[in-house]
Length: 123
Image 1 (cartoon, rainbow, N blue to C red):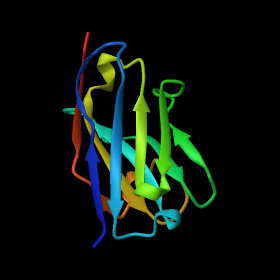
Image 2 (image 1 turned 30 degrees about the vertical axis):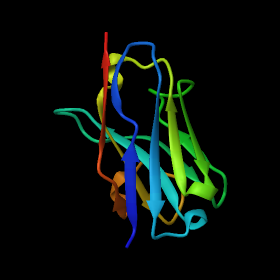
Image 3 (image 1 turned 90 degrees about the horizontal axis):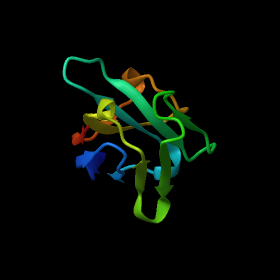
Image 4 (image 1 turned 90 degrees about the vertical axis):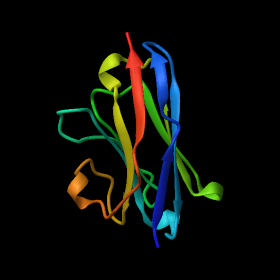
């Protein structure tokens, strides 16, 4: 069974940082793209970032470029999302997901999803 475990959310003030983790099991890490998505109440799910170990490609939504950094630790089968200079508009439930192709923000393509982790940024 493929399992994705997202963690690291919390309540922070604007300008602070958080690091989210997505621990994956049951899949060959190098063969999968891991993506981060977020969904705020009443909003559509948004692709935030993704990383492909196969070709090294990454993707960032315009809203998070220069503030968020995605990385991976193969030894731990874990992908991280470092979020700096957080803004109130970053408040959402963050999900990690996996599928076996190219890095993309199209959530419908992802096969496996973890439970969400809540990020709340106060102003």
